Image (cartoon, rainbow, N blue to C red; front, side, top):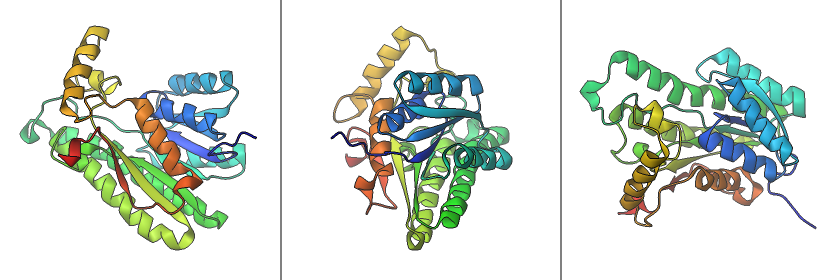
Length: 262
């Protein structure tokens, strides 16, 4: 008899329209989860749902700006309305530094506010709504956040890294506060992922040739010699969301090919 890691679990994935979010939504569904695919770009979220349904899974798409409290509350309500409850919240949505290579003094106050507003506020709002729902349900729940190696060491942009370090601390705090209620919280911390929209969003050229060249350069930075893929992150998220990680909470899991172990 085939068993699945997330059979019947009601799961929300933010940023599900692309990158780690789409890969994770697909894997969650493959493992039996019913998935709310949330993204600020509803069309991209609907495409993820189409891919899930084509593979025999169950999913719905919702538009959500994770920096807007009402949107986040509606996103959780959609999971409850569609699937009866919430079991897993994957706070994945995030944005990169606006211009790769920018130092601290290159950032404007507007840059700072936007990075904090999406990367930290979004995780705060998602975690808060999830904890409120889990407490109401009374039988625990799981939060997975997308942090970054840039929040563990000084790499990837000063303000971006600071937002991810804050996500890491929030994750650990939620893990401790949620433990008496059976709520687990962990974060995945990816290193360089050149095959995502982050390159274009950070102002870098985004062509197949550029991605291949960047993948080789980024891979060389990791002791294992390979760039990090969205599938690497999705596999880690599935594990942390599953009952196989039932006694794991407060963990910041590097997905980094050994980078922070140097």
